[in-house]
Image (cartoon, rainbow, N blue to C red; front, side, top):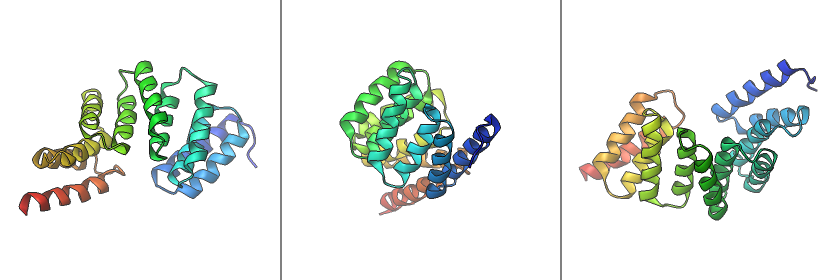
Length: 197
């Protein structure tokens, strides 16, 4: 069991983040559960567990934890952004839209807020709105892998294949180590096939 020493929480937090980045969802969930048990009521730690649950398909559990984080800190743009993302993944688009409005109100100058909004539009298949949200994120962080990939998806869905291919290529070239890069490569190959066929 974890001691309550801050370095133990910090170390386990870093491990949980690394596991999430490596897409080792079950291990990340287990580590995040230990974190939450060691520091109950800490919204940032609750969001790590929420992310792991969402990735494992426990959308109700993920949304419940994200809602708890928002309740614990109603001024946290990152908690609202996370709620928007996990609600969108769970098909709760109405709740995701509400959280997206709030995250933009709290943090219009944060590219991550626009990425969270983009994830809601992606889940709802709102392609022009997805394009707009991605462009807003990219205006703040031109190399954001997720925004570049999602922009490519928005453009491809609107049959703007050459622009989509450019966005996917930028995602790949600017972020070769990003987890989204593999998805960008797959999408780029599909768009190339459409352009050639």
